[in-house]
Image 1 (tube, one colour):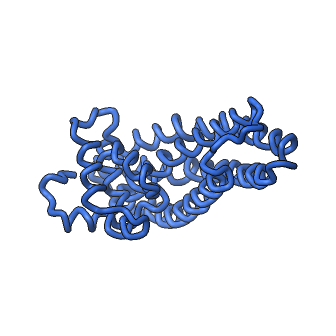
Image 2: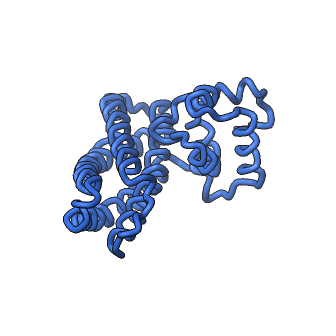
Length: 241
């Protein structure tokens, strides 16, 4: 994106997801103002400002400051070839979820058992995270077995100038379902943050309590980038194939 060539009005009509797809460094700006850029990234900047009560010129000023330096090639996800992006998502984010979700679920259940009497929200957090882990396990399997192979084949077919009409049904049937599942998981992780009071550790917290909140926040941060790469970059590019 070349924001310097766009008018104020044009920029306000761009979606939050488009901004972050063009330069991931803007994500920190939107997070600072409580604006969802992954699951809720399809709203325009104007709509987001109205919803959150943010002054538009101030937000655009912060976006400009965040993107003042040239973007490093390794951060420019929007330019990556689709097959490579799919591999990156699997090897980075799917691997992270598989390696960490069981550990976090165990910690959440443990502190719920020990501290649940004084902090009943911990029981809800443990239940919600169990649901998130189970849903993501099936979701990632569906992506790896159906969507990503179809994306790789379509991308290769486009480069070779050959038709790949048979793959379109797989994409159409998958993308709508996967986006809906992203919305569900995003809402659930936001519910955990609300229950945990933005992961503020109470005075009577033990070491495991503190560690659990730190890992839950880390999991949420990873999920935001994970879903952003799919919702705002991979899925729209796949639809254009």
